[in-house]
Every structure is written in C-alpha cells, then in structure tokens.
Image (tube, rainbow, N blue to C red):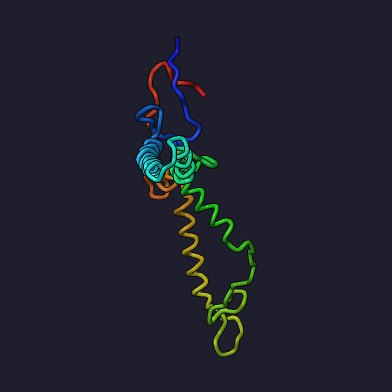
Length: 180
C-alpha cells in the first residue's frame, strides 16, 4: 500500500482550513454575517413588530433588508474569480476597463550633444565624425581582447599560460577505473 498525498496545482493558491472546512477568510465572513446580519434582522423585526406588524410580515421584511447588506461579506469570503481574491480581481478589472487602450509607438530617441543621429561622435567645430587617434583605438582593442580572454579562458589554459600544471579532479583508483 502506497502513501498518497494531495498535490495542489499552484502552491500559492493553497489556503489552510482550520475549522469546519473553512478558510480564515470564510470564518471571518461568517462572523461578520452573523453579527451584522443577525443584528440587522433582529432590529428590523422588533421595530416592525412594535409598529403593529405580525411576526410573519416583520421577518419577511427583515430578510429582504438583511440580504443585500450581507452580499459583500459573502463575496469577500467565497468568490474566487480566476483564482484571485476579490480585492485583487476588482483592482485588475478596474485598471483594465479604466485605462486607455491605445499604444503609441512614437520615436523617443534624442541625440546627445556631441553625437550625430546614429550615435557616432562628431567634432563640435566641423560637424564631421570625430577622428580617433590610432593610439586610442589600440587601447580600446587591447582592453576588449583582455576582457574576452578573462571571460572565455579555461582554467587549465590559464594555468598553462602561467607555467603551472593545471589541477584536475582526483581520478578513481582501483578496478572500477574505465579504460578509454
């Protein structure tokens, strides 16, 4: 006999159910509904009976008054549109329906001073592309070469370049050594 464990599709959607198979949110909604709904029902019923209504008429009106007041608490406790909590869903819903639905693709490129529209440096006096000295070009190339070497160089190649023997992982000894 194998042990079985329930695995939820999305772990973030899991909510513990501490009492009566209800989540903490549902328990809080029930408490709000009992106290607010019960108090409203009792107040309306007692008030109407004091005016001269019968018990049946007073409770019927009390139910109609209580029902719309309790709907928000029930929605908050049990409604899960698309797996989201109601406050998250309503925020996304309002943002979707209140935002502008146009996307503009305007060119926002602004050339910097000292550069032309292609991003090339220009000399301030003539407007021509600035000439770089061969020394500056050589320095940039050497820096790029050095950076490329440090990124792509293998540790064994680096050790050989420095004149040392590269360290290797210990090889297995004994009869389990495989021949190549």
